[in-house]
Amino acid sequence: MITRFAPSPTGPLHLGHAYSAIVAHDLARAQGGTFLLRIEDIDRSRARDKWEQQIYHDLSWLGLNWDAPPIRQSDHLARYRSALNELWCSGYLYPCNCRRADIAAAVTAPQEGAPLLGPDGVIYPRLCYVPKTHHTRLADDIPSDTVLRLDMRAAVAALKVDKTPITYTNNGASVQITANQLVHTVGDVVLARRDMGTSYHLSVVVDDAAQSVTDVVRGEDLDSATAIHVVLQRLLNLPTPQYHHHRLIRDDAGKRLAKRDDARALSTYRAQGLSSEDIRRLVGL
Image (cartoon, rainbow, N blue to C red; front, side, top):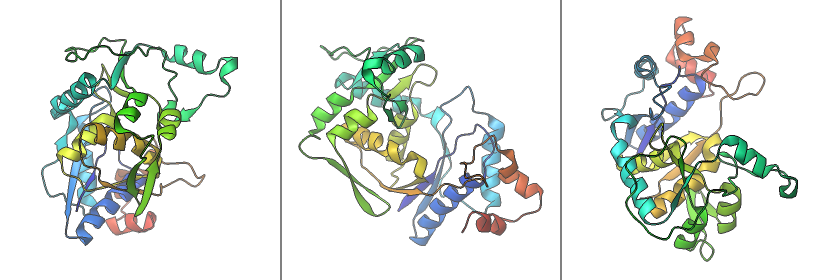
């Protein structure tokens, strides 16, 4: 078994991060497996070295240790570029230069009814879609006003999901994804934007495969994104790990914790004199 914890260095770790890291770490240790740490820093506009260093400090304070040197996504952009090129040449991507206002106007038109929401927000109405007629290598640069979207209809057709739904394991149970779900409740998600050269969906799939992760432990807020990840794994001929989506740690009002909630930052609890065992108790472990 190989699990991983993959935080972004864009702010302080809080109780929710502690819960996820501990669950992933303890799951691997209980099975005599491997626990890995990955720094997801593709958003270079927000990533900061001080937050990365604090991640190491916070996790060590929690008593967690990883079995290989941490990797940074920013060191592996060529991996994502290669995957994008494979998808592009296979006809699964198309460029889109819609502005948010364009999308909002299209999905709120009277004849469209209420906008449909998916893992990434409003389901994209395919305003920029043009059937691809040839498959040349992806250009070296993505224009500043352009993103690359997954053509979900083409993916569904290639994988023959209409005949055989895709399945994966979540929390020990088999989950089935149908063609209708992928097209109408997921849609044509963004897989690359110029400021990152990739996206969360693409990079997490490529990195999990590169690190041979067998069990993905993460919050239930990412449960709906798993359909995207499994489709990408199939298109790129990558293995599909088992998924474990756990409950979220919330504040007293029931709201999910965020990095801006410094009152529940691990560094704050540490400064108050709490121990790692206290943190385990606070998150119900």
